[in-house]
Image (cartoon, rainbow, N blue to C red):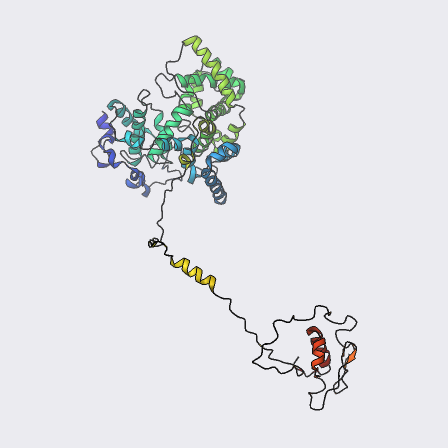
Length: 547
């Protein structure tokens, strides 16, 4: 029957075990099986990859986020992932809040790997997955795994085809775990956990994520005897008594053992119960805060379905109660409603641990010691990081896309002989020895008539003399800047005063009266500013000047 069920005559439905693992590298995750089988032509695929089924996307079950909000969240998450150790140590509350709001879809796989500690585990065990993948494995375990492959999310495009890319990777991950923990072996509830991880990350990352969930978050859940899940069922039963006494009395009245209704919830982390949008939000919080989120979700569903007397009237026995819990109303599983209710449930890590010790003591009293010694449970990402402190190298992000630089390769520097200097040093030394360029002094193109004619061979001034006598003021403060009384054309020009002495009269061959000429003696006693003031005041009488 196994050959008939798992091995068809068609080429795309070959047995997984006959496919060489050497051809199952990372390229096996490229594309979708629905495209290979031609399903995209006649079926609609939602944004999560489902082509049908109860978990397909619908506007009623999901809560869409505007694109601009997603872009902002992506920037924040990229910053956190780049400095993960600092954020987890100093700002863990902010990380928790952002997980409660929902991880951006584009970064969810990477964030899950960091939250669970799978990134550090992978870096510390490089080459381990390839080593396990190359081994044959136990034939009995492989046969059971192969039978379960087509049952995992059959309406998802990644697992819709027998022997397709998704099922190949799922087989590799589950087989590697049986070799990694041979004493634990394979449990059917591990398949949906691994499948959810494979939807968001490559096979090697999904393997280490599965290892962390089985060893840190839900230790002992998948061991023989299922003692850990039974113990957590008693913890859920005790927490129900505190959170919802009405539900607790109803379950106690009809002798409803927790193992009857919570096994699939807890072992599959609600991945096969809730709409997919709600599954992703629950996993965001679960990988951040630990198993208390799973307890809270279970308490919310019990309270919503059995929390009122009107609903309990329809459940007169154990069978009716089980049927009601198997068909949870969609409004209670809606993403926004469920997340709000989960965050309001008053159950903390301390409450779970306290009840765990109580139930463990009762278990030992009634049934004896546990047969499976599982490691202690870690409550969330912060506890996992504290138990195994990572290094900066373990948290370093490896780029998935590498673009070659278009710049030409650098030219090798020539070897110099002893005492020889490079061209850069020589040019630098020559540049430092150059003299500063001399500034040419350009004569005034508009000289005044009173300016003396100078010999062009002589310098403009004696460089040894100062520009002016520092003891003399710039101008006489008693004199106005100009004659306040305007003069008319052809009127007598008033002679300006220099040190209270009128200037001498101009000779007949001197320029017109409106351009007086100063003698050499006056140039020695008049400052440049006074000279310019007198010239302006003397020529203001004539309005036809070049000014």
